[in-house]
Image 1: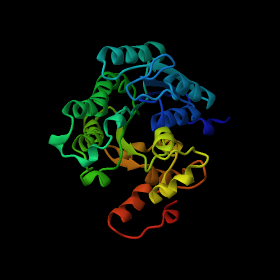
Image 2: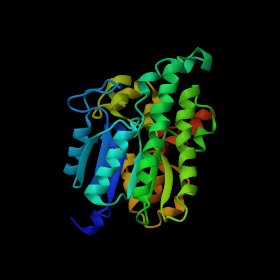
Image 3: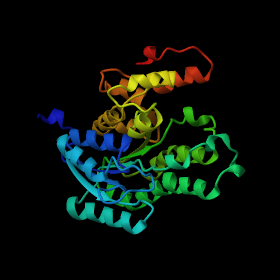
Length: 309
């Protein structure tokens, strides 16, 4: 494998929230590009988080990173526990002496949604709503608080906030009060961190996948596998524009390897746009542009998903 195949060789990354989905894929693709990747999450082979899924573990993510050609280091971490996050960053500093890439992907609140999209704020469970904000917002703040002093020690660091939707697509209300706040917050975090990082030669961005075929989306919502995912189109025609987690993973790896990535500082980016910028494709060779398609559909216009792949 050539240096061109491993543009992130020697880089140290932390992907917070890498047990499954986009977090796992970003970790694996950063590893494939040569990075050493510390991966965190709450579900281990001996303990299941409140998400309740047993089929994916953080240890497995670490092994997948290594199998892809990087070095995966699994560190079970609850990012609401400040002592755990501090210990995580201290370990990275002790073992590597640097941090080049921080990906804030912690979420783990899908189980709090259920039918809540049909309810007003005052009809929701307040405890569950506040828990969603803690999981989707506080975790990112805590992680950045402890990790950024290590990241800025060397020039060229990258912070990637992850959410669902860009600043443009999140300009409309996301139907549920707490979900709307949780998904908009990372956009503001990227904007704020771009200001906070001035003078450090570091970059902060926010990225979003499109219609993501995560493990839970496949087996729980559509009762399909990656192999027969198109069967899910019968249940929801818009599933035709969906993309694998690998797509965003490849985009983030390309972004991290871009020596001119600072031009994106403070911006919100989506997989479809990044794919076009960097020539990235999904595993089937297509380039899904979910948000462009969704924008047409939301506006009440006719759109064929095939035209956006």
